[in-house]
Image (cartoon, rainbow over all chains, first blue to last red):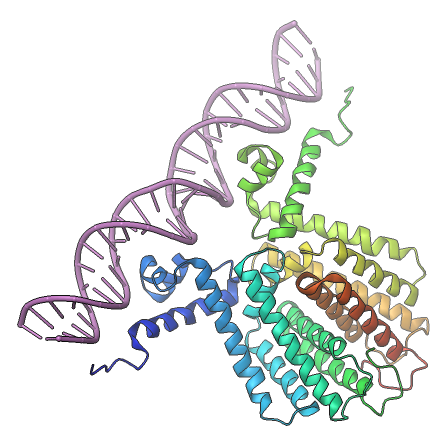
Length: 209
Length: 209
DNA sequence: CAAAAGAACGAACGATCGTGCTATTTTATG
DNA sequence: CATAAAATAGCACGATCGTTCGTTCTTTTG
């Protein structure tokens, strides 16, 4: 029992190493474009060796999707949680979200998966819906906290504002990939600031109803 | 030369019939999920019979993409052109665009293709970029005409507003597919109206700079 | 060091992929 | 109706797909 193995055991170690490569492939080619053969070639193992670590291709895809979600939360959510609830946290989330899109410009696994599996049914579809609706709910919660703080107008519909912010990030992703990141970021940040201004409790104008 | 053949010849006729089926498949499975074998099974022909109508799979995908673009323009752009230039036309475009998303809820070929080929290079990537940037430019032009008409504030950046409208439609597509169309439409229309209001020349507030 | 356990390999499977080639059938022409 | 031309079918190819199975190599355990 003098296991010098790195705490997690060899099995888990190589599994994570494989997942890392799979994640990189999925960023470029999507979860549907991820094949066990090319993955094995990439990690320098045999097909069956790679396959043995996941019961099936579907389980591999699921694992990659979960890795993407974990990365997203680590990079966007957790750091923002250190800021006080409300507007400050909302700004931090959006800022880090923009950085996230910049890092994975040519394909965030979560958004790619969303458009790959939104029409089909199956385990992956369910996982995508769960992931997307969960994150949306967290965005709603943060917006609600900003309202409770009095930092956003009281008559704001949290779901409406969360939808609009999400749409802006989709637009960022789309434009960054096709036309270039810099201008897309300018557009997103300008739109977000104007959106917040129109939601300010001092604003006399219309709010996202 | 007593051709009773329907004007376009048999070749073109069956080609269009095949394209129709390919379009339907691409809506569900994307252009990458479109295979000649399954398409042949769908139209009730042999693989080689279908293949002969397009020089390659890539040309088939290109043809489907072009069909999608033609459909989009027919359903969204052309009808809106009958309205006077400016704000009325912009509203018509957005309205018909929403209807378009409703019709092809589980996958507009254009958006699917955009997310499939934004990271790769090749003929399809180029076609997608050309299509997307062309349409964006048309949106910019309509916005500019509304400004020239005095229906939108003079200091509005057309590219910014066009980006925001496109982002809203991406959000509609995303939410409609994952969470249901009706609420997504509510969100989009509310956001669009608020966006227009904030761009009104009478508005004292900030505009999309 | 020997024995048991685990991890990776290599080969093969049936299927499907896109793409050629050659018949055969269907259509249009004189 | 005969004949040329076009459209489709049929077959096969090399590749790759996900998956299974038995063997070999490596690691851990007693």
